[in-house]
Amino acid sequence: MAKKAMIEREKKRQRLVQKYAAKRAALKAIINDESKPMEERFRASLKLAELPRNSSATRLHNRCQLTGRPHAYYRKLKVSRIALRELGSNGQAPGMVKSSW
Image 1: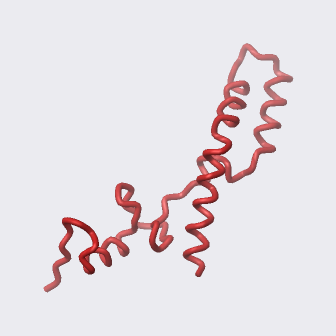
Image 2: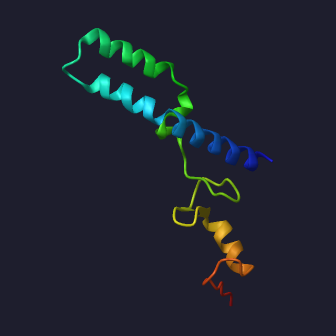
């Protein structure tokens, strides 16, 4: 149950990042523009701080799409090593054969 919750939480974060990406980029451009007055840059930084915390891309984590496991994650396949082994054992990963001796 907890694994499913972590997967859902990560999906929610991805939606928030996509929703606020343009707004965050615009505010960061104002903040980093040295030609703008200091007051305007400060207001932009306050507005950036008011955005949801999970709308920042640095809050995203790589998690297995099947188990929610954050470690040993294969980016191309979006699964962990344990889930990949299970898929290989069951013959569900094309081109992969798990050998055991």
